[in-house]
Structures are given as C-alpha cells and as structure tokens.
Length: 266
Image (cartoon, rainbow, N blue to C red; front, side, top):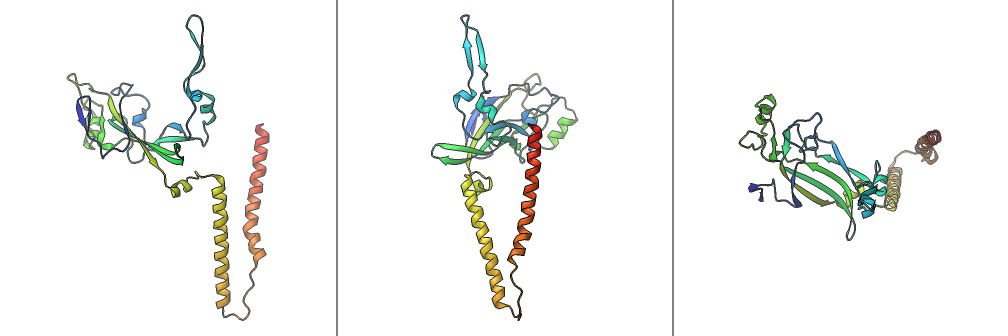
C-alpha cells in the first residue's frame, strides 16, 4: 500500500518495479479535439525508445554564451545526431498501449505501468527489445461532471467519477507510475532476432542438415521395406531444380527491381 497526497492507494498486485509520483501537466477535465496519451486506444504508439543507451552528447544541450549571458544553442535537448540517426530504424522500438488495458476519452488512469523487456547482453549492459504501457482498469476514473450520457455510460460500465472538490471540479491530477524491467529468456530472444548474425547462420545450417538427414532416413527406410520389384529411383536433380529454381528466380527479380528503384531514387 502506498501513501500519496495523504491518501492510501492500492496496486493490483505487489509491485516489482520502481514507483514514481507524477502529475498530469494538462487540465485533465477539459476535453480536447484529439485523444491525449492516456486516452489512447490499444495498440497506439505513444513514443519510441532507443534499444541501446545514448551518450550524454546525444541528448544534452550545446550552446555558447555571449558576454551578455545570452545562450545561442547549437543543439537542443534530445536532438543530438545519435538520436536522429536511429529515427525510423530498428534501433528504436515503439512504446504502444497494451491490449489488455487501454485508455478512453475522458477517462484518467491513476496508475500507469511502463514495462520494458530487455536482453542482458553483458554484465551491466542491457538492450531493450519490447516495451508497452498499460492503464490498469481498476484504477481508472472519468472526468465528466455534467451527468450526461457519456458519464452515465462510463459509470454503468464500472468506471467511477474522479474525486471532486467542493465546487464540483476534478480535485486532483496526480497518478502513480511504475516502471518494470523484465528480462527475456533465450528462446524469446531467438524469436525476436536479438542474437548476432552468426548464431542464426549456424541455426539455419543445422536445421537444413536435420531436414536433409530426416528426408534421407525416411526415403531409405521406405526403400528397404518396399515390396516393389523395381522401386523408383531418387530423382535428386529434379527435386533440387523444383526447390531451388523458384527461390533463385524470385531473388533475381527482386534484386533487379530493387536496383532499378535505387538508381531512380539517386
């Protein structure tokens, strides 16, 4: 149980992350034309994280100060070259609203859970793999105070009204944020393609060899146990052609089209 602003607040379960006491910057009881971050639907991408840590010069400000004390900025906070390089790349992962606990217009979460799933590459070195943000439904309340249709609909579905003051306005704009780090197991990391390229090359070679040995074993077993006087021969060249030609032909066409697009673009 947490004591915040003089009130007792329960979490859905024993928390395993770091807790922070936060406050909404905007006026939560004033509806806007577009949904705010805590009103987003499930699957909505709110922001991005870099999978690897940044150096201070990548996000810090850089400026020169003249004799009058006026700062002339060469780089604003969070706009360094290292951050710009990973935009729209695999080095940045999206933080989306979890499907199990989404937001609703006019509904405020009093508890927010940010989950970061990571790959422990080295001792003291983590790499982010996936991330999501959740608004536990048991700790949501709506901001409607006009007793209208939307308010009645939310209250009928189990979403209560937020606490109000003596004037009938929403009394508080605080919420609790829990940041949870969860490690990925090796099999999940393998499916997320987080290991080095050599691991996957070896894995595909081994899987190919296992498939070939399995095929040879099945064919040999049938060859030994067949009752045919003249069993059919194993047409290796024909099978190789049927398997390899479509792949090679498709890769050639894709390569030609890609080269043409690159040449046109440049």
